[in-house]
Image (cartoon, rainbow, N blue to C red; front, side, top):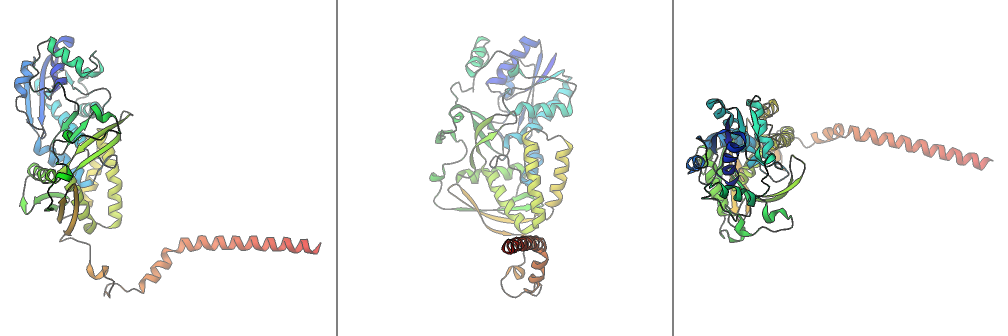
Length: 416
């Protein structure tokens, strides 16, 4: 059997390589994708081969990740659980698809991943596998093996002489990192009453330690897609990294939430998404002058559908394609620039401009406007209030009928 393993080089996937060889007699090919995590693909091939893999494929997916997954999610405005900007969820469909492509290239019989049986990622990866390789067997060691803890995995590795260089044997948190965010889960965070220690955060400076002087940044968008920062045209990955650096310096983009996992349980995660927070803040503000009320309401409805779709791993579906097509239409005129102030953890818009702005000062002004006659409002209100007035009239008729009936009863009583 030939198996392609989604490989990170961490403890779990390092252990999975020999486990697949021992329990399935498999030839193991490791695949890793660089979506902007610290270190990228450095040293992964050597580590994979040292643990028994027969081959390693390292893929630079940073541009595709930001351009084709991050920016469409940003454009539609999707947020899960009121706070989560979907950083981990966005990377999984891309990594799963590329893993399948490698499996086809090498003629593999199966796909394997290192996700636990309690998390969302197992669903996300396996839905990608199902979309592109329903014929291939899926092996999820965490749902099969006897290893139940980090200590068990370390013992397994030591017993087989698996190199553990770079593995922090004392780590408290489970983390996921890419160009969009870094997440922190597990350890003391499993108590929702626990306040995270400052040492946990790896990207953002504590807001109270951020510079005492605010910093301004101008982001330019074309049809809902960010294209420039402070007047400089940048590639998607470069633009996001630039904003990450700016936001991190000012403590922007921290989120602490208890979310509802797809598998049914609640879990706590702490996220750092500095560049993403700037982009969401700026884009939503630009929409306020470039799309109308009905379009904005429709877009908000679609954002919720997209967030659920992405969180649940249903990226490779007609649902996502349809939502994205609608988003592209509604964002067609979302072009312009937004100036944002970064200061001690806050990210606030101070100005916005667009060549396609629907805002007209002459209409918004309390003064006289040629295109708007205040007297016209009376007719509008009369028509707009018609259902309210009709209901009120019905109630009045009913009240009068009741009063009349009571009066007749009273008169009958007096006559007797």
